[in-house]
Length: 381
Ligand SMILES: Cc1cc2nc3c(=O)[nH]c(=O)nc-3n(C[C@H](O)[C@H](O)[C@H](O)COP(=O)(O)OP(=O)(O)OC[C@H]3O[C@@H](n4cnc5c(N)ncnc54)[C@H](O)[C@@H]3O)c2cc1C
Image 1 (cartoon, rainbow, N blue to C red):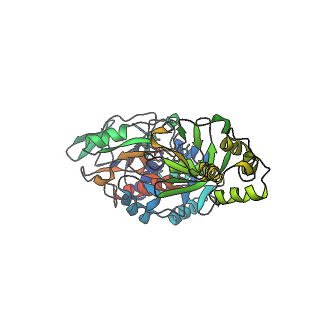
Image 2: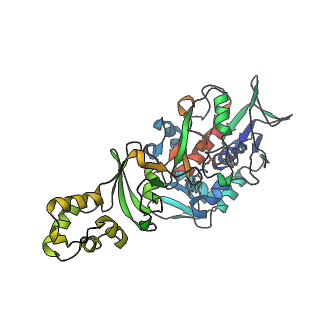
Image 3: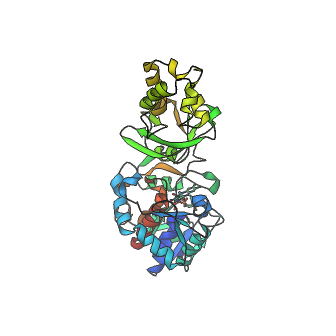
């Protein structure tokens, strides 16, 4: 049996970050991955340009049952640390929108840098870990023995890259609870969606109870997608959502004004001044009247369809795991140390990345979590 200090399960973003930190400490490390190559999601991330971090990283941009959990790792590894790390590896970054950093030369350079840091670790590919055995203080994985294991198996979404639920099974084996897993950062389908609008996009404000998300919304064949919807999908949508398609306008006031000044225009014609033509037609529906013929009460109803488009929770479905960028749910973080990423139930067992019940906002927050939690696990395992 081969002896190591640490066995890492998963050569993704967090596993490689942990490997780099361990190698820097002179530890003997072996990394198992079920795929033929490391970092498959890293290479695909950000449309191939890897949205590596975001200056807005803060605990409240992360979701999970125990939202404070991320505080330890993100205070240890900040966005500036990641930018400095990139700089030290000659990775050129560009700030696409405020604080959101992408790699100029593609995501491949990030993977190369991670592998550079992890040089000295043993890598075993095409090898799915199905269990972890414990013998006294030792962990045994696929014929290798070590005093620590880092479970970095990721989430179960976007299966095209090869994913598994083995991380959850290992956690359960050692007494951890799993918060039910569901797709997140994904499109939503809903009963009654109009495929006529597919392809139209506009800036919208989505309200989920007291929370709001403002970003670009894309109508799809089955419902709605785009960044605003991806971000809204991080919340529990059981109580439904309300979408405002013209968040900067007092729509009822503008329609009343149009009734006075542009009375001979159709409802769709008036709305078409502010909304894409297909959306304006969809809102007007069968109403072909001129705006002057609409009662004030009808104007209020039209305005509500635009600024308070409600979709009840029972009608909403998250798009499947196959297209979701991340998952909500995972290993319950109440029984994991936020300072070290070590299990509070089994010493020597560490978790990093998306396998934990942590899902970040769109815009580099998930990779940041993977880098930070991986590095912290690697500094402590
Ligand atoms: C298309 C896409 C684009 C994205 N773009 C961005 C972005 O630009 N910015 C951002 O912040 N986030 C992005 N994300 C999210 C981000 O990629 C993930 O949150 C992040 O990769 C999670 O890191 P991880 O180490 O936890 O898991 P992963 O990177 O998924 O790594 C897990 C690894 O474990 C291996 N594994 C799993 N089970 C086993 C097993 N039983 N035995 C052996 N190996 C196993 C897998 O093969 C994989 O290599 C994107 C996600 C997707 C799907």
